[in-house]
Structure formats: structure tokens, C-alpha cells
Length: 147
Image 1 (cartoon, rainbow, N blue to C red):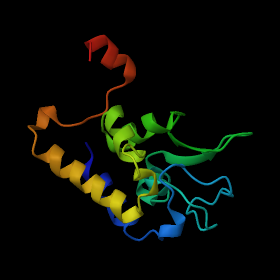
Image 2: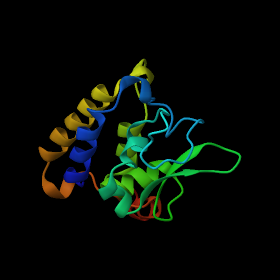
Image 3: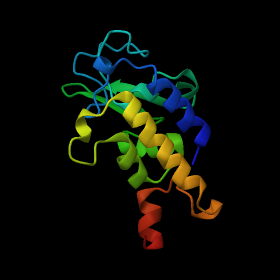
Image 4: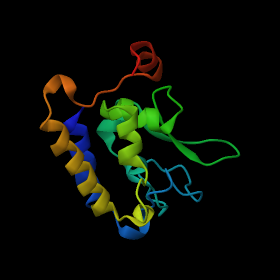
């Protein structure tokens, strides 16, 4: 788990205007390709993570898929949840937990509420022994290990 990157995202989310946050979309269909989302579109936590220069430098980016909608990629990884898992070095299941609404009503979460959710995740993981903490493992590796 890369706590530094997760904490950087928490700080970013605390600055995102509520009207520009949509927990259900990587970025809005009105996204015009601006890396900093200054076009006014709404985006989820992982979409906003792509605006952070340090995460862009390591390969996290928002991509417009022709004839579709924006997706988050990490380097050559086209699956948005897997991209989030790789970028933050967390399990794919934790990427789903953090970057999509999981509970009833959570789709209306504010950026500050999601920031707090990520903070609780970090706190929970740091209480676990280091070798048991969330980390990225490819789907293939999970299958091979019987997880």
C-alpha cells in the first residue's frame, strides 16, 4: 500500500468542489481532455487522482475511449479498477472499495466523505501486520495462489 499517494489524494479531495465530484463516473461525459479537469467536469476520487502531477508522472491518466466515456488507465493498464490498484499498490478488491460507491446512498457521497473513507482505510491497514496489508497482486497471481 502506498500511503503517501493515498494521503496525497485525500488532500486533493478536500479541495474538490462538491459540484465537481461524482462518485459514479471516472469523469463526466463533458470532459474535454484537460488533465487538470479545469473544464468543470465532475469526476470521482480516482478521476481526481489523475490530476495530481506526481501520479501522472508514474503513469496514472484519464483517457477518452472513442465512442464511449472516460476511463482511468495506469501505464498500459486499461481497466480502471486495476489501474487504481496498481497506482496505489492496493488489492484490486480495495480499489473497488475505495473508488466506487459500495453502500446504499454512497453514490451521493461528497469528496470530503470519500477522503474520510480513504483515511479510515489507511488507518485500518496500518493496524495490520506489514505483510498482511493491502498490496497490488494481479488477478492472474491471485488465481495462481488460490486467493
